[in-house]
Image 1 (cartoon, rainbow, N blue to C red):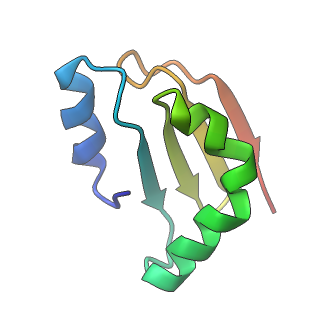
Image 2: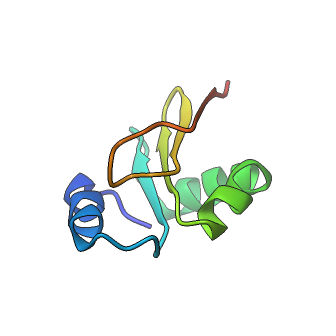
Amino acid sequence: MAADTDFGELLAKQGLALPSLVLFRQGNRGPEHQAATLLDNLDYVAEDLAAGAMVVFTDAGFRRHCDYYTGAIHRVQETP
């Protein structure tokens, strides 16, 4: 888990399928909020994370990049 967008780029340059990455790009960066966000959405993203995806949580929802090396967005989900 990270709030630093450079971390995703560093992983992508490694050229590996794993590890997965959870990136928080939200206004509230408190650890309690981040933990709640992940737990509230874990059912939606668990399978993709197990496959090596990058999940980006924003204030508007979340994006799942199943191939974050190319930037291809596999699924986009906006949540309230």
